[in-house]
Image (tube, rainbow, N blue to C red; front, side):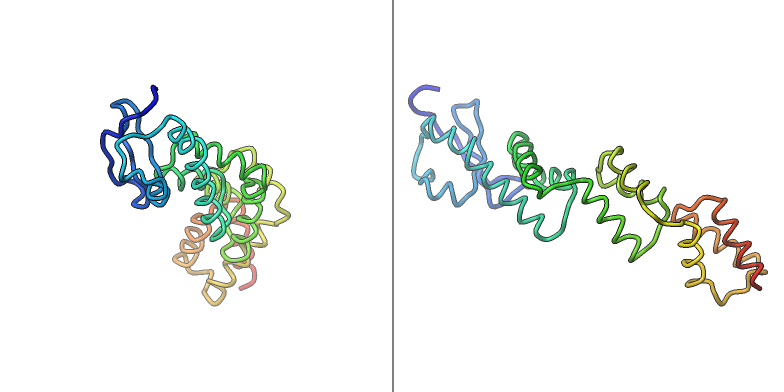
Length: 210
């Protein structure tokens, strides 16, 4: 790299307005938080030393990525894929993102099994859905399939009883001899991922109660 690395141009980072991108020696580029850019007086200079380049690339950006991830996690518990996507969307380099995730996993900030268990618990309390639908939603969040299977299969929930409770709450006053009502109940439960066997059992139970 030589003794000095020439700063060819600078621009605001396209993904993160709080970062500056430096283009160096026609072959390197380096993103840096604006406050660090100012602290190092880079705006007054035409060159950067190899030591400064390495320091920013290997330490500063990782520190900022870690801080951004912890701030994001403090707002809401997130799975690994969500943290990864958030950091990438903020313009952090792949190497800093991976390093940040590895460290936060070792510190317990990121744990996909705990995330899946919490997601299932909250979903079950607030808006119950079938195991099949929960698996689908967690997969869309980016949680690995083996973790999803373990977390969902460990649920101690009778899906038929949950489905019955949902129908009683929404359709308890309806006439279950009316085909239109039956159809509404069917699509209501299908939308929540329940299979035909459970739906049929719930409908028969309400019919027998009339």
